[in-house]
Length: 265
Image (cartoon, rainbow, N blue to C red; front, side):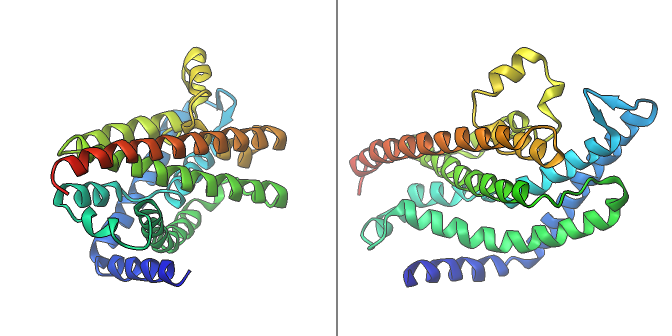
């Protein structure tokens, strides 16, 4: 465990070296959620409900979807993976007494510890600004289930980022792919708005993919739009997708490493 803590501590120290960048991102994050709230407030100016959502429920959905998303993000650390592959730094990792997958997952943990503190501060500011327009829940069983869902979501996002990073075995530039997949993931997860606003056929199709269980379902549970049993079902489906993604990542790593070795390791 000591070696993992050293990796985490090193990543925490490295992140603190970019304090101005962190402050800028934090300001942008807060501005983003405020803009979304303002836009939806305008939409609700002459409307009481939209697809069963009151103005207060919609604002709460946007804020908590934003909050849950930033609690589980990996902050684009797939770029680090791509850089390791493209520069040959991966060579050094292959001879160390820790697997590369575990190493990158540990690095992501170091990042999320910093992010957690920042997001909590951001959330306190948002709550203070919008406290009269938000719905709060003190249901202990619901909160425990939410924590479990967010934990699985974080692990899923780590593997998802690793998978994108591994694309560097076959291409020299992954930033465009990452951006496109990030936008698609946010859209399908219900980060921008409740997916119930989409056509029914698209909603049904979306339920077969993992992303909807990373934001939309947790927020629905929090707002009481779905039952505890439905939340448990969502958690079970998310865990199945997590296992499937892990298997896929292992396969991609095996084939990617063969290609990497064939070009100069």
